[in-house]
Image (cartoon, rainbow over all chains, first blue to last red):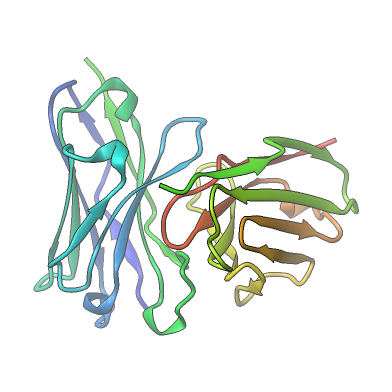
Length: 121
Length: 104
């Protein structure tokens, strides 16, 4: 069973970049597509993007095009989300999430615990 | 991009009530619709996928229906643990704006 563990909270200045990690101890993690979702304080869920199991393909929501990069290190079973040119409105909890491949649910049945990113001057 | 619209945004109900939440897609998504429950400070929890399939371990008072562009989540008899925010999601991507179910 895949279990997702994210890196700790971050505080960044406007204009800086942040890189959040999502690691799994499960041996099959490298067969999972991984998504990133964020939630600003008091707001809804916002899908950011996806990376394929091999890490060879990514797709991003239009709102984040040009500012987000999702990468994957299969040797350490870790996925990274980097967001650049941070703005105050990027203050949010960032979640990684995935879907059990063989179940074909089209939905996220496994979530990380979330990483709080605060953008503050 | 396909837009997902939920209604209502807030719903006040009492324990034992039957509750229905609607989600509309801006174009047909077949049955690729999921529902999540989220409580404050927690990650969302998958309740229903493929419009009507109950996730393992989710109580049977939750049900989903619909296809194409209109979907509903129904809670047949609201329990104290069900006061939370609910989100719909199209296939592995965009979410609706959420429906907060509050105590009446």
